[in-house]
Length: 159
Length: 159
DNA sequence: CGTACAATATATTGCGCAATATGTTGTAAT
DNA sequence: ATTACAACATATTGCGCAATATATTGTACG
Image (cartoon, rainbow over all chains, first blue to last red; front, top):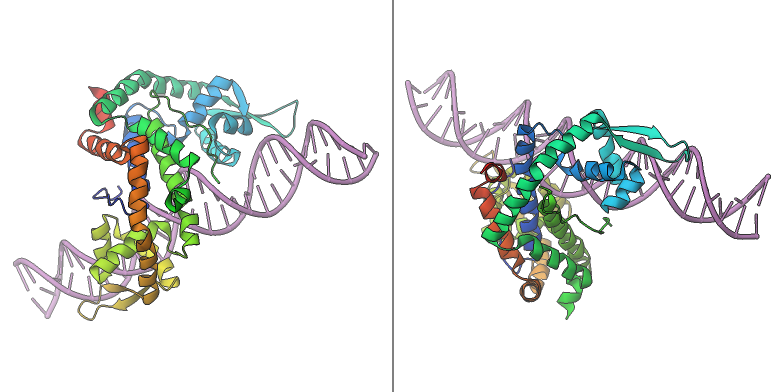
């Protein structure tokens, strides 16, 4: 367990917001894993979206999935071996294009997605309640992301 | 450069907030490094707080720094060799306790902190302006962190 | 004194991601 | 047809962090 004590909230420290948001990310991930374990979900938390994208596509290559997810296709390829080992996906040669290898969900993969799906409504409620409680975290982060994309810190500091 | 395209904002996905906050953390870090390079700051972005804690303490062991920073002392010890190599800190035996090794800032280390310090006022202004623009991101994240510490996701989902 | 235990430092290993490099196969231009 | 290039898959390497294990030294207590 990471040391989850104080985090500097000093506005003059350029990284303080980075540290805070990273801490939130970690906390969510570390609270998700036990939840998945209880529910018999063996999918790596970081690969859920991959499976979701795959079920939506029916079948897809690593490059397809990467495009769908906005990730690098190297990252997708790094994640796939674990999913293959867990028996959640299968890999096939593409008869039409020898470069491509096609992934498909197995029955076990569908089962896992169904288990995840069983939580989705409740999860939506939980997050909405959380935002009610603490304010619109995700809206705020989205806006901050966009603002920093439009005008990076370096530019802001020069003005 | 990480693929910085779309990120799922689907509330029903338990990890969406984790991904969002991680993206923010990454964006800040990747915008900080070039800024540091311009300013002749060679400190690893993630080790700034370590140097700050060290200058405040005057001298400190890895365990001291870990306590001050709320990090594991293993992590501190992992960061120190790089700072030693960069000539920013020195390591000394503690005459009073052979277990402890004491770190001190070198002149170069003080110089680096001075360079960082030269930005701090401006950085505070930039963040305040950012929060004016997009809302109180850091307040929201802090509250979310606290809320999840008080009542974890698993508990919230069961209710 | 000696024995258990606490505190410290450190090495090792594993995980997830980024970056880079390589090799293969399709495609388009000449 | 050859040549160049694009797309794809994959291996390798490195980074930062977490977790574990180990060794050393101090401390407290019998």
